[in-house]
Image (cartoon, rainbow, N blue to C red; front, side, top):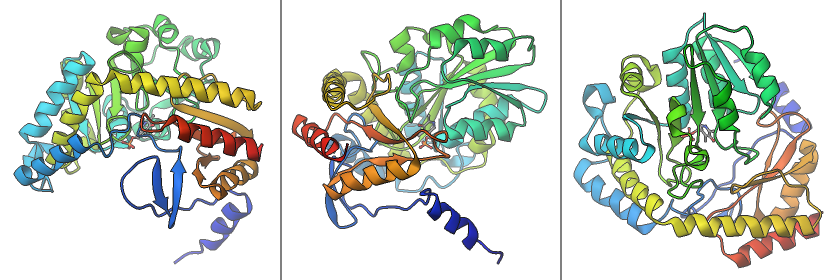
Length: 380
Ligand SMILES: *Cc1c(COP(=O)(O)O)cnc(C)c1O
């Protein structure tokens, strides 16, 4: 085989080398990783549902009924009444005509954009959108125009004199920054005749809005977003993703989204477990309220320490430190004290903006938050 060592050595030299920890047991703030008990602030399990006993029980019961594997794609014989009911319940939850389940959020984005656009079309995207949206734009072959993060003048300049058929795409909550896209401003600038707005709210569902309906509930702009993407592996605590929208959109995806058509359906038991998770996520508003109180306490404490925070009202609270080397050193300093926070480096984030990405979950205690602040104080 051809030579690979040069690339790996280069990654190492630049503090960009990626490795994995081996973790044991359930997703929870306290978890044994690489043989050591760690307190983690890096999970996307924002509501603490990933190991909720009620959801676990649903999964077990559904496995008895449906087995494990779904056996085939949705269009063959892999689409069960469990999947179908979850789609209907998510459609009601999102206030849409229809919902289509995908196996992952990455695949949902690839499928939607490449089904709707081709070489003569355009994608207009915030500079910091998730990698899966950029890959989706690439796969579709459409022209990709990016605007400065959250900057509505830059956005307007990308729309100027552009009559192409186009998708405007943004994260609802930005995955590495935690800030919320200015959806009302985006909506006000878009010509509905030739454009569709796609919002990927992977980090907003379950977290934002009284009933966890995400950034569209936060801004009360549900009717203006044409394509809403959600993932199930974050606040929902299970696995998979969905696209919500009009009847014709979903029917088009069933015909043409290749990452839907040419892949095995998610296990039915996962869909069944997610139905339980969806109920809990809507009903247990106290999880969202508690999470907000943790976020406020953290921001207050971090400001006392002189740390620079991002304007984020969500459980994603990055501390931007600049160089990859510094981010890695700080992450190691925290790990030495039993605290797990990921260092996020380029190319996940732009050069010079490496950061500690701290995330909170409704399953963190206030005492655990205090331990994090103490550890941060000791390394800054
Ligand atoms: C996590 C994430 C995805 C990918 O979802 P998966 O189900 O993990 O593949 C897509 N978009 C955004 C904004 C995400 O944060």
